[in-house]
Every structure is written in structure tokens, then in C-alpha cells.
Length: 208
Image (cartoon, rainbow, N blue to C red; front, side):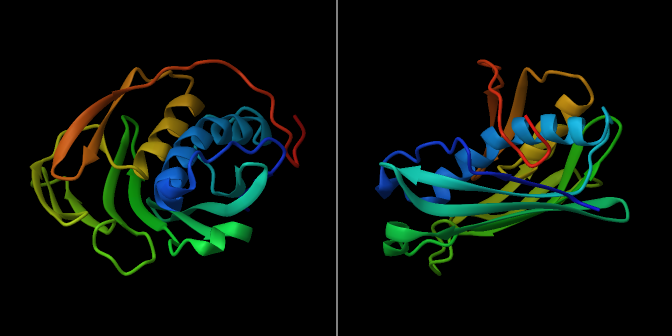
């Protein structure tokens, strides 16, 4: 059964409202990945393998809840599907965005291999729409990323905004601390460093 976690005890500010739910949601989901990996480890008695889960968290702006985001990780055979969806709440309903993403991937002994990544902000605009496919046999990643055509060589370890969250969880669950990730950014690949800035205790249905 998937683990469930609802973190509403210490929600983080979403910054300025005009940044939009899509950008705030992506940033928060990446930060939540590390917390989820710790939760999964405690809930599965120290297991070092990924487990299906569902999680939700709220966004707070000037003390008001403006959105709720839900994350879900499912397994079908040897592939995983990681999806996220954000819905506005309260004043957040004034925004037109309803961002969602779906990433299909494989978890290997070496790393996480994304297979496809789709997402949009729910407005119908193509400016935030992503639809890319990863061909690991031909070593190419192709598609469209926010109106930019994508056709790039594919090297081991390359991730997108969704699969990198799973990659981070896998690394931490296996007792490894990643130093950097290569992330698909429109029609280029950029390197990002991972830095652990500190520890924080979260209240969850499984305890602290």
C-alpha cells in the first residue's frame, strides 16, 4: 500500500503571488523530496528502496493558504509514475494556473532513468507546457519544452524537474548524498549542486 503523508504543520511561504503556482510548486516539490525520503525510511523500518506514496502540502502567503499540492508515486511493473498537481485555495483562486506534471521513469541500480516528462500550468498556454521523451538506446532526448524544440544528446544522470525529485529520494534512501544533478532546462542541460543546509523536525501521521 502507498504511504500517505500530509504536511500542513510548517508550510513554507510561497513568495510573491505573481510568481505563480507553477514556479512555486516546482520549487517546493524539490525541497519536499528530501523530507519524503526520510519519512519513507522511518515508515518502512529503514528500507533502502523506493516505495509508492501519496503526499500533500499547503502553500502559505502572508499567513493565508493560497494553494494545495499533491504528489503521487506509483509503480507499474519495472516503471514508476511520479505525478504532481496543484490547486488554488482562498485568494489563490484569483490565479488561473492549475499546474500538473507527470513523469514516467525507471529506477536502476546505478541511477534514475526518466522515460517521459509532460506538464503544463493548466491555462492552455504553451509557454509552460512540456512534452519530452527520453530514448536511452539512441541516447537522445526530444520534444518541446516551453515552446523550445528539444533534441539533445542524452547522458546517464540527466533528469528533469520531476524525475530529479525521485532521483534525490533514491540517493538519500540508499544512504548516499548527491553532490550535483544534471537537469534538462528547455533546450539545454545545466548542472546544479545539491547542498544540505540543515535539519528540521516535521510532524507527520507517522510521528516526528
